[in-house]
Length: 371
Image 1 (cartoon, rainbow, N blue to C red):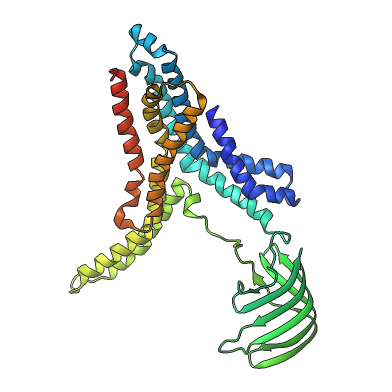
Image 2 (cartoon, one colour):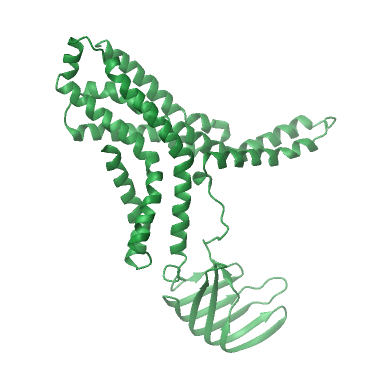
């Protein structure tokens, strides 16, 4: 039940931020919304599974202790370790499930979700040239648009900036139109009743009437965009890391052994390899380290639930949120240092697991002895 609650909350945040606008504007149907939800669920399970396991453990053992059932069990000769063993086994099984979600299902679903979102965001109703200011998003050009409504433009000024081979050009048009070539993801600008001078090299051409500008690549939309490291599966990250290491290590072969500065050159190249491969290595370790969150949360949740000795649900949720924030703070620290390999960020990602498991094991041992 707690996993369902956290899944709903995390889904709601993503849907409100990215999908609701498309639904309100009529760009996406309810079918698309349900498809987006189905693709997002595995991604949010990365966080919902450990959070749900921690909250459930705190609620169950807090109530178990508050109702004196733990005292009754001990009086019957059943130790806390015996009671907790099935829960710990369940947490290990959930860690295995989390590993599959973290390393394969989640990243693949997230990438498919982004592709779905990309399909509906590359639409003329969402892509607009901003009004009332100069735009420099297109290399070599500068635009000014008085009004922009659903692809219809008013009071358009276009400046083609000069370079070594071309003189600067300027055109004004009271009306214009934006069109998108969805196949090539380029922007086509048509000007009506335009006036100005257009240069091609040193040859200037007066413009009077309708005029079609060059095709422009849509800023922010890359048909062949590369999958980000965060959205790669474990297998893809390993391949990416291997390719980077092999490609960047080739210069080492060019360093001659008899070169008096061979040692310094090799050290510089190795530092460069380490700097450029660090982000991929950090994401690789994040997926594996995060998979053990269920076990660490369960190990610390059992004794804490007993110590808190409360049956209220809101208390269990509050403690779970605090522990989750502490755990994720360590994870975020490691991720924020992914471009600083000298701090070993891939090992920092394992610190929260180590702390939670050690502290949890000590507290569980003490609780079992009644300390």
